[in-house]
Length: 480
Length: 136
Image (cartoon, rainbow over all chains, first blue to last red; front, top):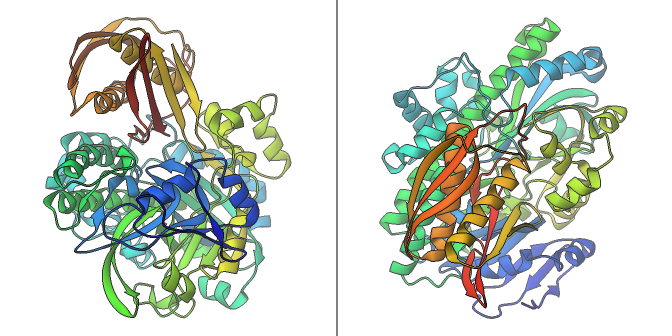
């Protein structure tokens, strides 16, 4: 398929309506990114999303766009409450895959002598890789229902972290409307064994230091300063979410036939938002999102314990506090102003982050003057970024921005490129200690497999859909 | 014969075979290779897997997802796949394999799910062709 693309400015590209598209596509990318994008199928996926009924505004893609399945990764699309649809493929299998960032009262120089032990103990205390779980944690079916209804608050009630953490999680760590009746026995079974686990693939736990502050006043509000130690947690809803998505794809394939929705790709199967199928999916999706919030909350508690044990300091000294926790894969009911009118929309973010502007009521009071924190992980060799949401994002992208670096190389290409390299040794020489559950994963996740996240956030910043606050440099990484 | 195919974020599997049961078996072998590489596996245990779907292409996706689930749930690594019964909407197969042994087997990748994105199962001159992309 040859796709017509028009450059709007240095960061924006329009895909004018063509074929069965109901609206334009809008891609945020530099010229170089667009050049690379034309070689894969992500732009076609932007067009495919634009064919879905009830789409409001353009079918969008953030600058970390790459070929996904159904929606492109980096895809954002909003649907009208009456005429629109919800698509499990627009959320993805890893429902509420997301990132949490913790600040500390520690200086990088202070922990460097303990770094090896810290990363070893984190690798031991936070289950990572396939089939790994804590022997001291078991979950009953009844408790699992509480997890998926209450999210992070359930974990806090069990002693994982503190109530003040909840204030700094998107949606306070729970999405309303979760109904365990809408979740299959198989999803419950897969989830039971995997709550409190990091998983594998691109999931990670990272100790970082604040390398550069770009906006001191915003950094002060977030409690960030140069040389400070931070910790990032990147994981999601594990097998629970994968199964919810798979179960509902089967339901939505039937629903699309029932409601006569023409699909350019089966993975975009969907149902009208006013249908029983859509209501059931959103209730089950909320359960999976809450599972993921609880998962990151439990891992946070184990990170804190590990720092206490290794550094022999209490939380009053360490002050490992949650800066923020964001979802990357989600569909949410939100109110946005479209053509001068307030409209209730179901906003799908597939590999994209909510980025609400200063003053928005959904932002914690402490951050309301600077906008919602946006956490953008890069690769394990270079850096990650902290941004804030902007009025520009709210006006143009339904309050959304990028979610990461985006892959550049396929997994096979990365594996080939890694051949003959001692990745762990090379990263250690750069000052990054890595512990990985699987050798194959490490090769596929090598830094060169990803775009330079600096290029991605540069586009976001210049386009005004995110504001750069700080850059974080990895010190130690646990990979699943 | 299966082949693992490129995808920017994930991976795909495609296969060509003389018959429909053979292409479904070959796709499952491709899935095993994607998850466990070239590990040599003994057929020590047999399990029956049955799936149903609305059409052949969706049956292919359901079949592969069921194999991945069976492997994850039981910590088993598959060795062989025998398609026992097949229609446009139902499939019953015997999967043989053995418990995953980290001393003898390698674990390559965790499968989140086999997707419907560009999933394809079609008759071609001289046989059948199948393709799926897998979310990793």
